[in-house]
Length: 156
Image (cartoon, rainbow, N blue to C red; front, top):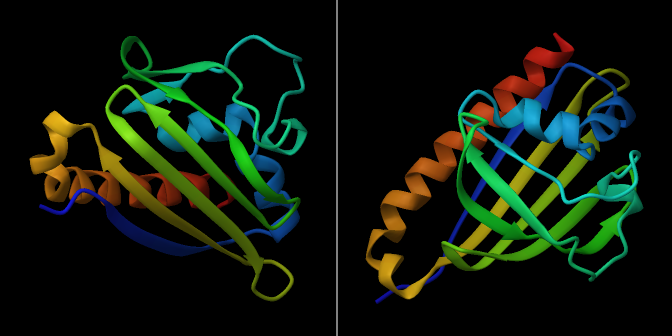
């Protein structure tokens, strides 16, 4: 039985790459992409906490994922393990629902005022959820399309 799934989604965003990067690495930007379906709380830390300021490879603590921004239903032990500021990050985490969660995000300029953003997700559901992997992959693919639409709308 297959236990790991991967998908990728790319979009062009109508904004310069630095502006897109500055948005996607902040808790505010991440949560705006995920709304209204969910939000993710960030463990207490500095007010200016961003993906750019995290220590590589060190988990930031339990980040609660909340359905509709209210109902906690999962948590993420989030770690940024690779970072090329302004261009790329790779998150490797475990979740209550996932043995493995890898999120790679690339931000690339396309001319002066457009940016290609690419998300590549690899995940392994916990053992009891493994049979539903194909369904989870479809739901997550739709969710990342939603995130890209929200990000594009922010800059439109």
